[in-house]
Length: 605
Image 1 (cartoon, rainbow, N blue to C red):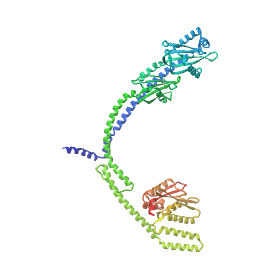
Image 2 (cartoon, helix red, strand yellow; image 1 turned 180 degrees about the vertical axis):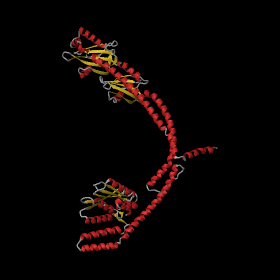
Image 3 (cartoon, rainbow, N blue to C red; image 1 turned 180 degrees about the horizontal axis):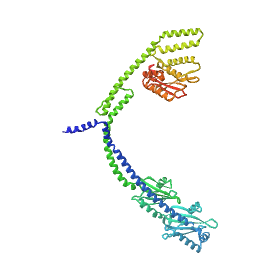
């Protein structure tokens, strides 16, 4: 019973493995549904995250802007109040009076009391006359002030500002002998309305607790922490509204925040002391102060993260299950295909001694069987083609040799040459001599290997024949390295290429033409280039010629010269070697010839 049960999975697997490929793909596609599920889950989580973050950013930005506007209006009111002495003739008069009498003290006290009661947060107002005497009015909780300790600082600030009001950021002042208060100040130089010369100073000290009433509503709504930083980078006010004392309020963290506030307003995310924050800021155009609201991201995203985590866990469970099953099935499906691809690559590189062993009777198994039969057939065809080509080459050479009686032709040409010399016709004698050399080289032992030097000498003799026939029409320039000349090569390789260049490239050209033969090594192979400056050929003709050379087609329009050379090279050296033609109309033609590996050529030598 147990063995029967254990055989059931194997039978199921054999049934699945023998299914058609289409049904196998259907099974895989079913599990690929997990990908859309994952993508939709990601988009949903991302959309919720961005929506909550954008909403919080917008709300915090509005609150920060409102707080900054409130501070701007408050400071603007104070600055306007600093101009009141300009419109009070009694104050103008007493500021220029050197001695303090009862009338001066009374008038100054009444004016300072009025200024002190214009804002609830003002804890002290100071008037300094032309001679350095200080008059002030203070909040009820303060019994004594020490303006003399601050006189130099006031003078420095007002001197730098001229007649404009100036705001001094957060600083500490001493009150009641040993107590201290945190304030910010608004100062202004008072000028005479008649002479326009400085006659005194007016100073407001405002309790820093002013900002608590402005920042607390912002913190309540945003559940964050509001900071107000002056234009010198000093913290003016910072409030805490969290369960822990956030390090955001430390002075050394202020530059980290300010380096991201390069716009009039905006937002950014920052990591401080192990926590991530969303920071929303606005920069006042009036005071230059920056109001920053920092909100811990975990507060904003905690609800989103809970939903996201649940969704991620569910999605991961589905995806993991789908991936396990899909991976197992895909491996089973692709393993024979991979084996076949690997064998095909070996065949592509010339190795036909391969064999595929199909395990199942599905489409892949049938494909493997046909692949094996194809390899067998290819081997037979290649062997048949090789034998046929060799027989054809030998038959062509024998037929050519049998058509001519070499000794009769040589003797006849020699007789003609001697007759031309006796008749004082050296041109005909030279022509006959060169023709004899050409025929001897091309017919006698045509299947033997020769050196590159012999091949190039044969080309020179051929060009000498043409130069006798067509004086000043053709020229030949050979630039082949000396070390290449002793290397072996099959016979009659260069002369048909040069002949093709002469009759198809240079002869139709008006004026003289030149042929250049050069050689170099490339990736260990010997490369020759036969180039002419003739009429060239158009793109369509060039493409057809190269296709014929590559595929071994019988192109009548191109003759048999290049095709014969190309086929003999590929037959002798291999299918990776042969001819390649490059040409442009009116700019000549280049024939690139690769004949063998340099190392093999030297070894054959």
